Image 1 (tube, protein in one colour):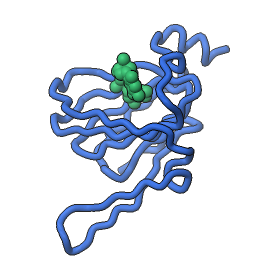
Image 2 (cartoon, helix red, strand yellow; image 1 turned 30 degrees about the horizontal axis):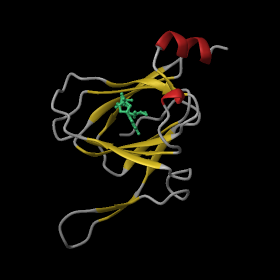
Image 3 (cartoon, protein in one colour; image 1 turned 180 degrees about the horizontal axis):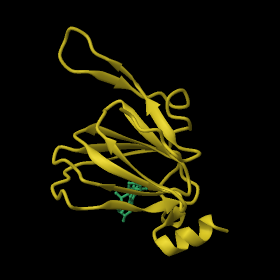
Length: 141
Ligand code: T46
């Protein structure tokens, strides 16, 4: 069962999945219609060979993203400075929209895990808040 997401500007995004008499499945992401912004960047994370590694551990000042686990599984941690939530990502066509100013972590990766992320803007290190204390100060302003 999918647990409801607690945070405003975030939520699940379900993509159409086509399975027919042939092998495999075909999953479609349309900009604006499915991914609720103009996609400026797509990146993926794979070869996760160390199951105890933790990625993320930051928030974005303005960037919006939608994150999918297109193979395997991992745990997505979300934190808006007040509430925290963990979501097991294990359905290839169900992503989570990560709004801005949401601290997020990715962990407990299966060895076959592949993450696919759609982003609303190009990479900019200035958009990252990588210090948790700074994040808490900014969200409580
Ligand atoms: C996020 C989560 C879900 C670039 O040079 N260009 C890029 O487009 C990206 C995404 C990263 N980088 C550089 C920045 C760092 O020197 O790649 C290095 C690793 O990035 P980071 O430590 O931020 O990776 P993750 O897996 O912790 O976070 C990534 C995204 O960076 C981040 O925006 O929200 O996935």
